[in-house]
Each structure stands twice: as structure tokens, then as C-alpha cells.
Amino acid sequence: MEKIRKRKQVLDPEHQHQHQHQRPNSKSVRSAPKSPATTTIDKDPYPSHTRPTPPECQSIRDTLLSLHGIPPELAKYRKLKTPNDTVPPPETVLDGLVRTVLSQNTTETNSQRAFHSLKSSFPSWEHVLSAESKDLENAIRCGGLAPTKASCIKNVLRLLLERRGKMCLEYLRDLTVDEIKAELSLFKGIGPKTVACVLMFNLQQDDFPVDTHIFEIAKTIGWVPAVADRSKTYLHLNQRIPNELKFDLNCLLYTHGKLCRKCTSKRGNQQKKGDDSNSCPLLDYYKEAD
Ligand SMILES: [Zn+2]
Image (cartoon, rainbow, N blue to C red; front, top):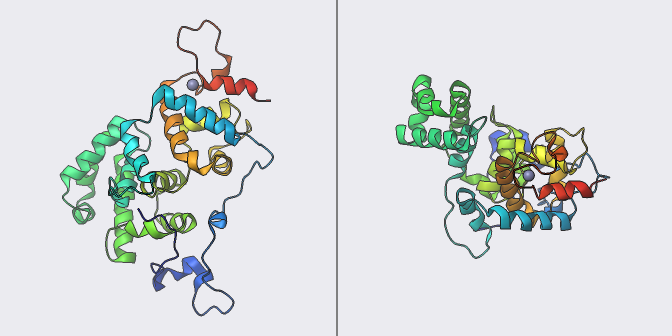
């Protein structure tokens, strides 16, 4: 896979307003490529909060990897991280985005069913866009929030067609993280967590989405201050967690969070000794916190 983040010709005239610093007629600006160090505009809201440290991230990754392994449905995305891998991506970026939209507020099983139902009900994205909203909703109903998700998917498809002439998001593969975030933020209903998932799974960028489980774990073991909300947790963890560990750690914490009640409940760290379930290795890290 081509991993080089290059500035691109996709910045076509109709959306130059999104990238005013690149407007050709603007006199003081050049389209100098950003260095990787400046590809993120996000700032750490807790710069003095030094956890998680890189050794801690490594240690937790190793512990959870031996405990859970990377689940197969996520492992297919991980393989692409290997530089000499020539295996084509497991799905298109647009499929990944829609899959992520369908995964909101439902279980993995139901969201998979909704996605498969969608793909088998409509032979192409063109058919999805031209379908009656009711038919689209029926196809994805098992994933919940069908009217909201149907309208979100249609909006994405419509806007893509308007702006780019086709329903395809593969062009995002050649953009920087900031550019990808700017592009995806144009779509109504596509929030930061969906963007982070697409970045990590489909675009092989070093991003660390924060879902409910990961948010709870981060608070429980002290990776963020107790007052942190999810978006600040996202910003902080993305600054603190070493890039090369983000994918594994994210999949493993997500997997762990679904299985373990101790570190995802608010009282997780107050579990009584002698509790009949297995102990949670992450709570050892809690004890090391201040
Ligand atoms: Zn746990």
C-alpha cells in the first residue's frame, strides 16, 4: 500500500473554500506539504497529564494481546499495516464509512446484519441513493435508528455525487489526516468517532477512536483526569499513545471492554476481593496511578 501522505490534486475548485490556504490566487500562500509532525491540528487538552506513558501502552498491549488476541474481524484491517503487503484493502472506504455509520448505538452482530442486508438489497450505491427512504430503512432496520442512519447514508451519497461526480471515497487514501477530517466533516451526521474509525480501519492512519468502552477504561485506570469527556479523551490519547501501538491497543481495549465488567463500570476499581469472575489485568495499572 502506498503510505506516503501527499498533497493532492483532489482539491478541486468547487471546494477550495475548505482549504483557503491553498487558493492559487492568494498571494502569500504556498501549498507546502505538511510534515507528519504538523498533520494534526488537535491539541492535547491535558498536556501535564503524562499517562499513558509509552512503556505502559506497550505493556498493556502485550498483556491484552496474550489475553484476547486481535479478533479476526479486526485483524483483516491490521494486516495492511505491513509495508510490503500487497493485499488489496478488505473493503472500499465508502463501505467502511457506511459500515461504521450502521454500527452506531447497536451491537456488532446487529450492525453486521444491517450492513449485509443493505448490500444484498441494493446492487450499487446508485440504487441506494435512488431508493425510497422507506426501502432503505427497511433494509437496515435490524441495526436500529433506521431513519437517522438511512438519511445519513443518503446524504453522504448525494453530497459525494454533487461534489465529486461519483459515489466513491477512495480519494481519501491520498490525503493527510487533517484533510481527511475536513472532507468527512462536510457530511451531515458523520461525527468525530466515525471519522476516527474510518481513519484507523480503512485508511490505515494512526488514529485512536474512543468508543464507550475505551472511554470508561481510560477513566478507570487514570489515563485521563476524572473530569474528562470523550472528545478530550480522544485528543489526549491520540497525543500520548505511540502511533505504532494505536491500532493494536485500540482493538484490544475495545475487545477487552466488551468482555470485562470490572474496568468499564464506574465502580470497577472498587471490586471486592474474592469476586468470582477473573481479575482484570488493567486494574493493576489503576493502582499505579496517583
Ligand atoms: Zn477489565
